[in-house]
Figure 1 (tube, one colour):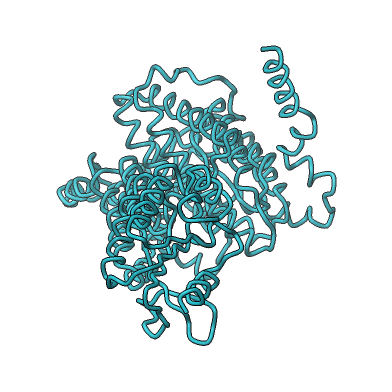
Figure 2 (spheres, rainbow, N blue to C red; figure 1 turned 30 degrees about the vertical axis):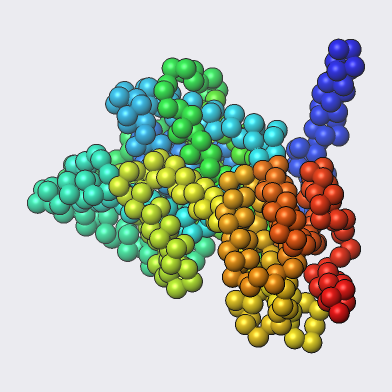
Length: 576
């Protein structure tokens, strides 16, 4: 008992010693070595990024159903603390379109329409996401997101984009929107089209054209900020607001107040389902953006560390009247193209937003709501990547089917359930492939000592009385019998003079207890039929397990040195 207690204390001291803590805060590594020449680049990038995320974050906040200034708080506090812990030089965090809509549509049910409860649950969701991030960091679960394939994300994003568009079109036309899934919202929109407010529509279309033209002429520049400033000036000096163009209204002056979430986890049923979906989406988007920009700029990131940075960003957001944040490719690309050299640009962005909240909120109250809808429509249009979807169709029809399943799931069931369905489909696809692994029959490549699949290379040399098989997967409890059945079919296809079966396990990185029992069962069956069984190129952990199953008593020594050709030549020499 004393030994166990001492060991635990040692582990805790090791985990919380000064060196490990400093390694978990990357800013302590790069800031002391910061080059002054970088500052002008980080300064320009930070101010440019703030100009970009200001209108975008306010627009996304409307998707989440929370006050517009929540979006600004997300970028301010979330970005600042993310910069302290991230290993990426360019990733910028804030609210994202798909996550905001998922939160908004889910909280509409959880809050029962109460605005105060709505905002409180949004804050609690950020806290839950932070907790999940910290747990995933402690247990090194950063690889979990790899269960969701890029193709599923492609379908999910396209579906999310259409779903988001269906929520913003009523604002563009100046009519009442509806609830429900994508198809229900579109049907309600068509019913209300006769009541279109053409002043709102005209204002919105002009703004949309300016955004499109501006981004074509000035790619990577904060065009949306120029459009926002122009719109605020137009609304403040004209009477357009009296013609149905609604404005966002007062935004609290000053920095966000600090306070713990007013609700507890036990107060809200379903909070962890929403938080887990946000965690998956947020972490995947963050890592995708980080890897893309790291590869482009020739540096590396630490995926596990990004769990910690995302966790702290959401933790602080939960205590600052904000909601869930994650890295986004659009704002991160703006940061990178603006010349950012270090995460200091994110800190400068936060400082710039703080100055705006302290000095310029009087102007933000004239921001037209239709403009926020236009910014969202323009931003999410890039999520529908038709060329990439067509490419997947050409490469693999099954993958395309899964892509379309994720796409349809979001449209029919909503973003939250669509995310969950995407995760389930990813796991089903993975299990399906592993449950039915390929067992290839090998033949010798002419004039070499190498062996390959004779189904793909029918001109390979085969030998009478010898069956060579390669199991192209780990052998696990749920696929062991399938592997045995395929081995038996290969044996049946050979004539009665079969004398040797060689199993190449070079492509089987892991064999569990059930898999080893199956191989033991196979060795006993072959022994009774007076057919030799040889296992070659098995990895060390596989060899150790098979030896513990005492297979060497039946089939002889399982050597790490023997290759397929060695066993074949030895058998031929004995036969001759």
